[in-house]
Length: 192
View 1: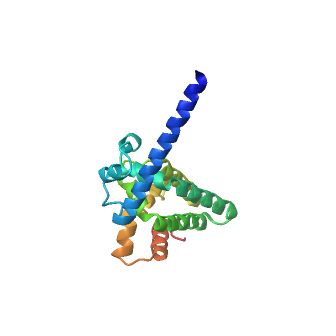
View 2 (view 1 turned 30 degrees about the horizontal axis):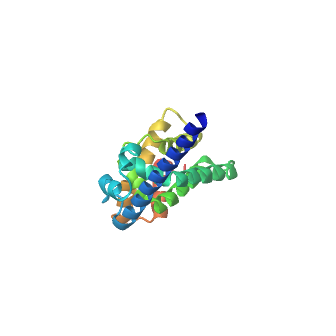
View 3 (view 1 turned 120 degrees about the horizontal axis):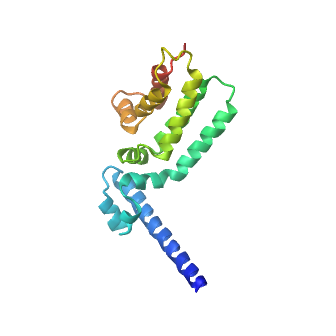
C-alpha cells in the first residue's frame, strides 16, 4: 500500500510539474507577443492551464518564477565579483554590484517590471540585494552624525533602480545604462 501511495505521489508531482511548465510556456509566449503589462492572468490561464491561480496569486509571482534561475545566477556573479574585488574600496565594489544588476535589468526588464508591480516588494531577491547594498554603504560610512541611515539610503537607492525609474531616465531623459549608473553613484555615494 505504501508503494502505491509513493507512485501516486510521484505521478501527481509530475502532473504538477507539467502543469507548471505549461503555464510558464504560455506566459513566455504571450509575454513575447504582447509584453508583460498587456497580458492578463486570464489569458495565461486560457492558454496554459486552469490551475494557474492555484500556483500563482498574481502575475508578479509568475514573473518571479520565470526569472528565478537568472536571479540565482545574478547573485552568484555578485558573490564572485565581491570575492575577486574584496580589497577594492567599498564605493568601487558597490558600483560593480550595481553594474551587474543593471546588466541583469537590461536583459530581464519586462519580467522585473512584472515582479515589481506585484506585492513582492519584500521578495527574497530584493532583500538580498538590499542587504549587500547596506553592507557596502556601511563600509563607506565615515561619520554617523552627518550621514543618513544606511538602511534608508539603500531603500532609496533601490527605489531609484526600479524599472519605472530606469525606463523613465532611459527613454525620457536619454540616459544610457552606463550614464544612468554613473548618475546613481554620484547621487548616492559620491567620491569624497
